[in-house]
Length: 212
Image 1 (cartoon, rainbow, N blue to C red):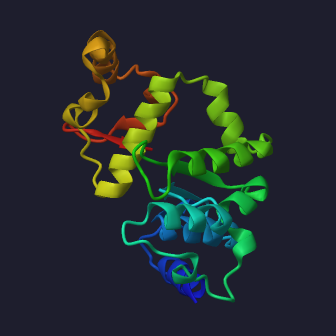
Image 2 (image 1 turned 90 degrees about the horizontal axis):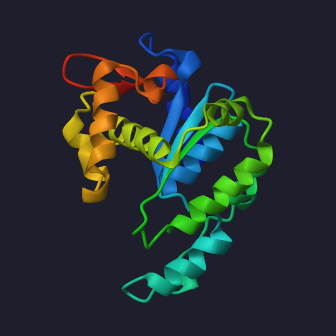
């Protein structure tokens, strides 16, 4: 099945000489998102996962897709393989998930809406003892700083490119936030932005930044 294929890819990747096996992360979107979370949970070779547009559970996603599907799909059209571990979908797995995780979701995503990722996030917070959660909370980032870190991660992973420039970030700041953007840009240029001091991002070359 799909999870066995994913396991085979992980094993093959770990055999590559250029791969740092201590820092293997999985990334997936939609179906790939919940497969990545399950595979990360089940493998001792994976450090964490980055998930975009993540269905919380089949109990949540199937009725929702029936409601929003433009061609009028029914639940009977949205079949789940009999041997698929439904109890390992993100909402069920989150309370016991003990690895690094980043959730990315668009506010206008109508297939896997924001509330599904929020549900997973709330369940992940049941594990406040996780070192990853404790580390992030210890920095006490404000909302804008958290969003900027998420944007860096999104650009780096989805574009497979560490050449992230100011033009990639500026759209986040509306007209009323121009002064804050100038301050943020100045801190990034001088290397004293809070995300840089926390070693979350760094200068990678003359043209851009990269997530660490």
